[in-house]
Image (cartoon, rainbow, N blue to C red; front, side, top):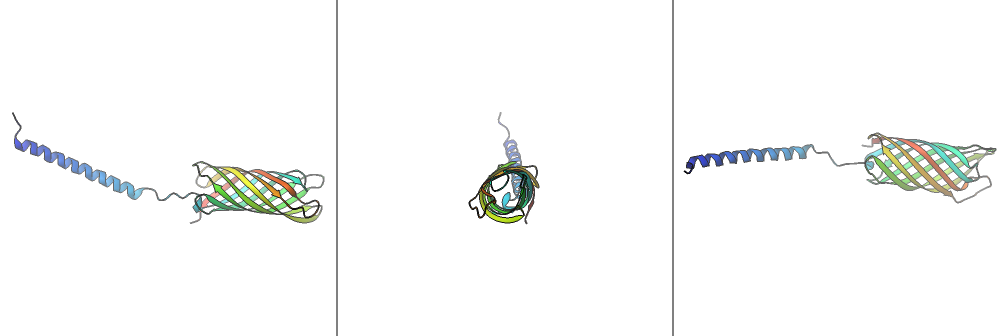
Amino acid sequence: MAPAPHASASFALAWCRASAAWALWVTIAIVGVSLVQPGEARAYEEQIALNIDAGYVYAQHGLPTHGVGVGVGAGIGLGDTFTLVLRGGYAAHPGSTPGHVLSATAEVLYIVDILTWVPFFGIGTDGHLILRDGQVRGNFEVHGVLGLDYLHSRTLAIGLDVRVGYLPFEPTAGVLHGLHAQAGLRVSYLFSRW
């Protein structure tokens, strides 16, 4: 026996209402998610970093070989992969005739942003004032830098970096020249520039 024509029409009407309600809820969910989705991701291009660091310093000529150094710096994101860093530092080279080095550094770093661990490399230049034997002398350095940061949070990074440079000039005897290397730990406070 076939169902009455009005029963199948009722079923079809109920099915259409359920489908329409389901489609309405799916549409509302899609629109809602699109309205609350996060904005464009911005990592380093919108950040400023304030850094403090300390580490080991090696000098090939002109100073006692081994020393310790400290520094402060600031970096600003130039895009999503490049950062400009300006740094000031002091290094003490103890020995029979100790040496003291003040330095001003400018670096451009290429950042490889891989979530929590962030490797980077770059190039830089330094101007040095060297105090030894009561005399102040100056010199210029070019260097490469390689490092790794651990992003503890959006505002705190802990990192290590190695700088290997060369001072091509020996203006007078007793001036830092030749190979110069630094290896140290750094703590950075990060915040958005906007």
